[in-house]
Image 1: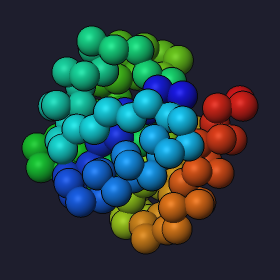
Image 2: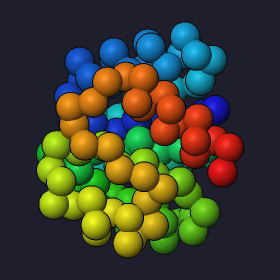
Image 3: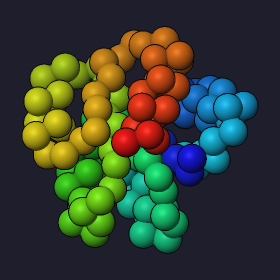
Image 4: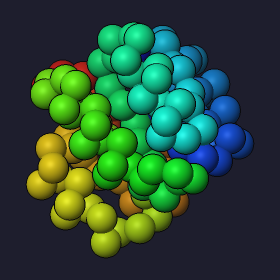
Length: 116
């Protein structure tokens, strides 16, 4: 699965990228929404893993822009802010994980989304 992870915490991005690549996924990372949007415009991804709180645009704003470009985009939200879960799901996110979570939970969600 080709995955784009967008989060402003570079240590988390690097850890998740390295771990998910051991499961055979191809992972690109972006440290903010604008960088993520640029990568999204130039590459077809199977899944976007999106944080909410980031510098510049937040995850909901970036997701909205992505969905306007591709109505079939699959976005999995990961955030420490539970107040955005309902908005993210109503907007069309395929799932929501509340930080912190174990990496195996993320892997299971990615596998679930990949089968859908």
